[in-house]
Image (cartoon, rainbow, N blue to C red; front, side, top):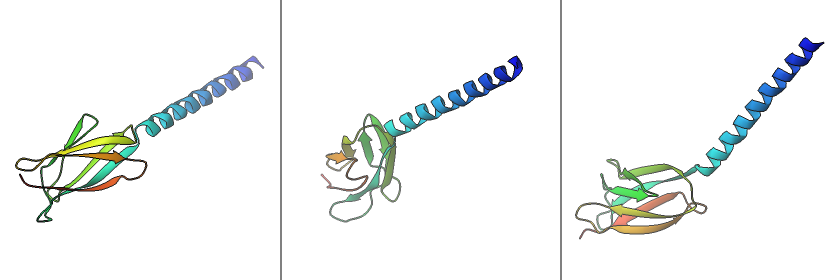
Length: 110
């Protein structure tokens, strides 16, 4: 009888630990689930700009050869994104991730 009770309590404790871990994981995923992606192009020529710096929430990525970029794990809906490239005007854009997650950025040469 004591052995069955001990096994039952151990199983209950195990299931409880798994449930708590799952809840904690889900809350972390919700806090860091924001993603923004897009591309950077020359405003006049319409050509993609490779190597443009995209900064958001103290994180920096660079556009690839096709001008594309992606930033994952954003924790806020309303953000400021800064796009810069040598010989181009730096541009700051307000982003609301609750309304959009895909952006096209056109920057002008200086």
